[in-house]
Image (cartoon, rainbow, N blue to C red; front, top):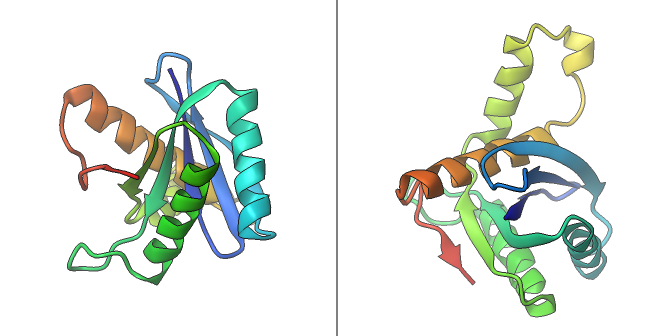
Length: 148
């Protein structure tokens, strides 16, 4: 079962995709934000092209576990997705995924120049891998997934 994950940002939307078995996440692409309706349409087209059966949207949380401003924007995006599709759409804690994406690029030994740029698709893959591992182990993961 293919699962698509979204790292939603104000300027860019990172997208990752699982393998057909739903075990391994890989970065797929980065979309540049245009407007919520157009962004939703583009994400759903990607989901259709890849026979996705579930969509995970990363949600930023504050220290108390409540959605921060970025997390609230992600919720609105997830709700807009859910209004346009019958696919299940879930929210998942994305805390530190961008930080982890930067750290991975450093650990890979990439030069500063090659590390520059956007980490959005890699952050989405980290988010998705977290979801897949929690699902595989039967645990709730960093936060319990929220079905919209």
